[in-house]
Image (cartoon, rainbow, N blue to C red; front, top):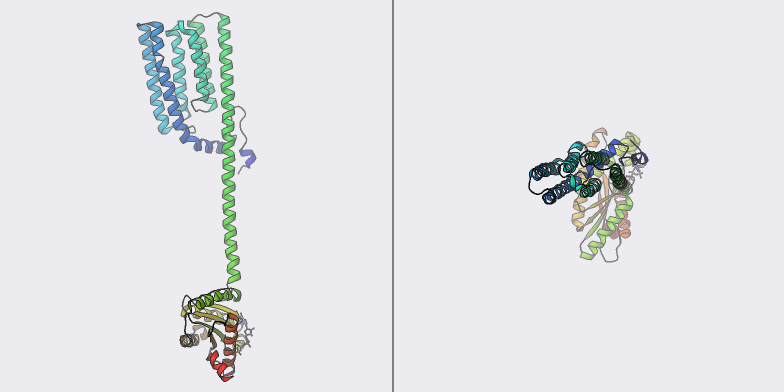
Length: 401
Ligand SMILES: Nc1nc2c(ncn2[C@@H]2O[C@H](COP(=O)(O)OP(=O)(O)OP(=O)(O)O)[C@@H](O)[C@H]2O)c(=O)[nH]1
């Protein structure tokens, strides 16, 4: 692939990109505009050429010359209109450069032919050639080499016709030559400048597009990185549950809402019993599998609005919004049942997988999340002391105390 610097380099004589691929891209980009502008400009030029039939009549009067001139103008105008139509429909610098060149050659031939048919109007014809040359360069969109060749044909053809038919003295021929050289030079350099400017503008625009695309890609890459980082920070890698800090933030929000709506709110702490023994007997990988399986069970058996987090090693925490205490106990017991049926236990014969669950509920306006966690933890502790594999409510603990 070429660097931006080389792809911007232009041919000094034609104003075109040195890199063919970029030139083709530029022509493709301007094709629709050029098709329209060329079609309109050729129609206008052809109609102006046709209108000069009035001056033919003025110079020649009615006679064979007038008929020949009218026939010639008719052929030129008709061909140009057909070509304008074709260019408008299928004009393309890239593949059909000849189609864009043809109207110039037809118009040039028509202008040259006026000399033998109307030799006495040479002075007017010189002006017409100058105007036509400028129109070729600046009004009818075309590639510079195409215009330069057609204009040269017009100038040389006109000069030859003037010398041969109008029989002008050498000094007049020289004056006309100089005038035509000047016209071509002005037209050539004006169009060269325009061609270069338009291509530079195109190159800048392309560069901007590439930069914008790179920026968009960079932004989406950063966004996905950000999302990845957020996931890492918010999720526990082993179980996919909320990490402790993320759980706290979500549970805080739920508790606030429950308080606002005066709805019940309960918190559950779940701890795997004798987990150390699992690790010691079947290895840490099996221990990890057990934790992941318990997490999956929690996710499946709880409601979508419940928030589950991994609080510590083998300890899970669940926020149960809009749940009354007795329902929370039911949920906990169901969870206990499901854990005891886990398929992961097949790899651990003779081991009963159980969990102890402590539950605490919001009793008054003052209770905050830390209080609830503390109370649920106390209940859990009491459950462990009471022999494990049980559900303990914080009120029961307080009652005993
Ligand atoms: N495999 C595995 N083990 C973990 C992980 N996090 C903590 N542990 C282990 O979990 C064990 C917890 O042991 P204890 O705190 O004594 O708890 P326990 O053996 O379950 O006993 P009780 O809770 O009293 O029933 C420790 O051996 C930790 O190393 C983990 O992510 N994966």
